[in-house]
Amino acid sequence: MSGITIDHVRKEYDSDSGPIRAVDDVSLDVEDGEFLTIVGPSGSGKSTLLRMIAGLEDITKGEIRIGDTVVNNIAPQNRGVAMVFQNYALYPHMSVRQNMSYGLKLTTDLGSEEISRRVEDTAEMMGIGDLLDKKPNNLSGGQQQRVATGRAIVRQPKVFLFDEPLSNLDAKLRLHMRTELQRIQEELETTSVYVTHDQTEAMTMSDRIVILSDGTIQQVGTPAEVYAEPVNRFVADFIGSPSMNFFDVELAGEALHGEDFEYQIPSELAATVEANSVSDALVLGIRPEHISVESDGEDTITAELDVLEHEGSDNYLYLSKGNTEWTVRVDGNTRFEWGESVEFTLPSEHLHVFDAETGENLVVDEGMTAQTDESSVTV
Ligand code: ADP
Ligand code: MG
Image: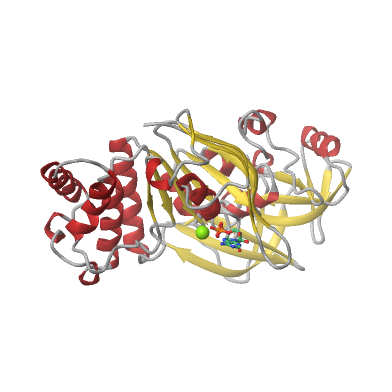
């Protein structure tokens, strides 16, 4: 097994209107045995980055190492990686057994008995032991997904690469396969890089998350870190569902002034914002679950309840005041009436203030920013 080092890697595609920079100066260390997820919107460069690790795309600039070996010029089949794609890419004319053994026959000198044993053990592990003689077309989406994963596992690679492998499954099965993949990865302890556009998937599956936008890394951290201490507005908006509330504000004295509200903040926080901002235009951010409807005499805001959504254990309140809208998550047992006035506070420990110009989070803990480790990550 081995880790992966991505060292100032760039990828440019040629196009009629000049080169497209799909991945721009990405540096990242994936630790040995780690489950790392790369998450970002469509077109952010996730697949390109993964395909460069796999050897399916040339690297325009920079270096990729698997273990101690520079792999830039090593053919895909000699890199010790196995990739699982969204569309499974199974051979339709081959049985499950043949699909799973094909790679081993091609790239190893294992005897047929050893290959059979490995295929059968892996099929057992993936819960597809009774499907070995079927053709892919006779399998459900979930079963095909298991075969594709099994085909990767059976090769005992140094690294697993997953490109949105669960996107074609229905919601319930996706949830199930998520835990299944985690279980298998924990059991095998194979270094894994998992690409998804789904932040929930990233948050629930990974040791660490890399958030990518426009080919550049925005932040690297554990799910808890990127959730609590997003370094910029992009990350704050992308991670968490429903997403963070954002309001255009300006700082006047020790109060944030929005279009329809004013809110007093602690002097320390005001000083930090003042010292770190480059422009007067700020954006206040707070997550729906952090707005407190148990007002206790502090500075409060009052808004009208437009919509109440029951989600079982939670209720979502959609409040408005003038042009300003607030999404608030409260406990499912809390009772509210449509149209009523709701008073709430914004606990200062959960406030994020972003510079409107740079998008940078002005109140993120210095320690957290350092977490993105300048030596290995380019932000
Ligand atoms: P993601 O997987 O995050 O959706 P991709 O890595 O597929 O993003 O694409 C990143 C960018 O590179 C996009 O702008 C996409 O249009 C462009 N791109 C990807 N593959 C090619 C290609 N073969 N030729 C030209 N442009 C490409
Ligand atoms: Mg992709």
